[in-house]
Length: 386
Image (cartoon, rainbow, N blue to C red; front, side, top):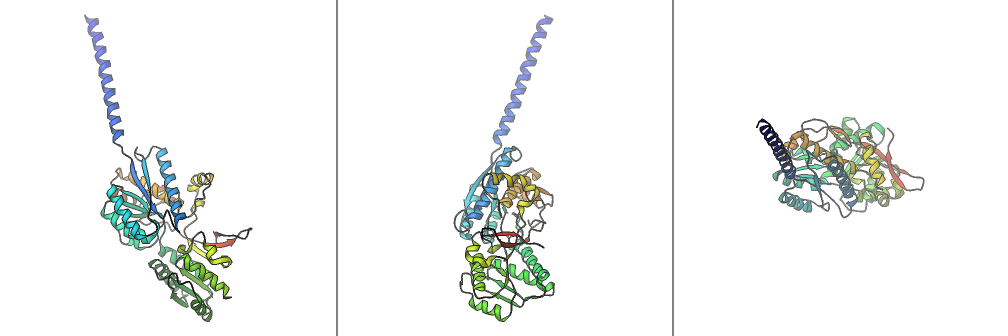
């Protein structure tokens, strides 16, 4: 009898262990099944004149998502990336922001231009969506102090201030002009450059505006000549900057041109012609040279794609969202945003980034470049020696 009870006891023990194991596996499987994908959208100009920049955003975000998912995702959940084209227009950006809110997408990488990011950010804020822009540099984007805005790019006021300081430090005896295209972007950049010049004790001799798309700059060139302008900072876009550089050169006037990032497009040499050689550009740091980006840059190049300009900032934007979710311990956008803005370092391909309460990165993101001629006669953008 004793042996029978012992045998039965063993059977009960095995059955109990089996049931417990099954219960644990069922619970684990249930938990895994409940871990839905985290929807993230990358939104920018995927078609049109700015499509190259949109492609950089898309590629950067996609590789970041692939890498994060390949390592197990975020808190065990995979990221599902959606790509949308805002066509570089505020109206389309607003429509897409409403669509994403309706679809329940709570994390957005975008937009590209500030004119789209600013109105879209307000819609996202009302609909519990966190937006991380890898490219929008207008100070107003974060000065509104919306809870939901972060950017991995720098700010125009930092860029404009840097340009003004550079002019005063490198051309201390020359006459300056500051020309804006009259847009919020141009005026903001120009005003900070002027302020920096005056702090340095070297105010501009000419401050003026053009009309976007005016095409003919003979009147302005006449003023530059009569006022003996030697250095000109242009705050505007390439469609105006290129012709201005070309027409000034054709008029026989030698001026050291400096532009902000708004005039930096891949076909600028076609707009400006050979006169583009030697033109300076105040722009974001060269992220490809950051040691933290070495592996990612190498993999992009192995695919035949050069990760210029906004590629790595978009990769970093996805990293910021993912790390924010991990730090917050939740996917709740407001809590994630607060974690990102807490000042805690976030490892990215741009190095460790910290963000202030507005959502701006604390690390200065600007340096000076110069258009140089290659051996084959084409022009390329390169670092400017200090």
